Length: 216
Image (cartoon, rainbow, N blue to C red; front, side, top):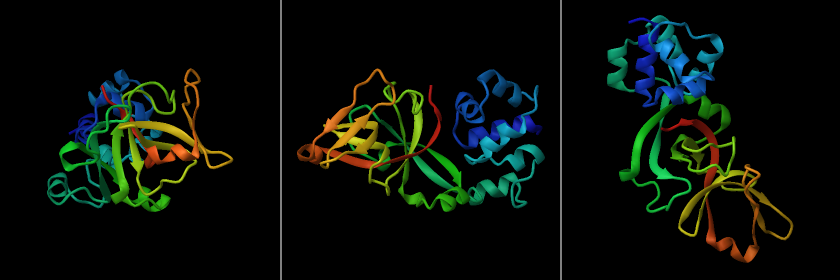
C-alpha cells in the first residue's frame, strides 16, 4: 500500500469520517481526499495533529507499525500504546435518557497512552458525546464530538451538565455567594444565573477535555 491507502486505513481504524480527520489536521475535505488518493503528500503539521489523536503516523509514512509489529498481528492483539474511549450515541442538548449505558455506545476512539499520562487523566473516566446546536460558538460547534473527563467536576471551565432531564455543554463559573453562571460562548445567547438554592437541579457530568471532530 502507498501513503494514501495507509492513511485511509488508519482513518477507518479510528472510525472517523474524511471530514472529521481533515478538520483535526487543519485541512479541507478535498485535501483529505487527495491525500487518501495519493495525489498529494501530507505535510508535517497535518501529521503531527493526527498523531495527537491516535493515528499511527509512522505506519502511514513507512508501512511499519510503531514498535515493529505488522498490521495483521497488531489488529489481533489490539492497538499498541493506545487506549479506547467509548463514543456514546447521546447528544449534549437532547433529552438525556439513560446516560452512558453499554447499549448507547456508538463507536470507539483511540488515544495514545502518553496523552492521558501527560495530563494526569484517568482513561476509565473519559467518554465521548456529540454536541448539538451553536450556543458554544467556535469553542464547540454543532455535531462536534467532545471527550468528557468525568473525574473533573469542579467549576470553572466548560462542562457537560444535566439540567431538567437535558444534557448541556456550557462554560461554568462560580460567583460570590455560591451561585453559578452558565455561559454560552456564542454572544447571541444570554448568561444564566443558577442560584445556590437551585443547584440541586444541576448535575455536573464532567469537564470537556478534548474535541475529536464533527459528525455529518
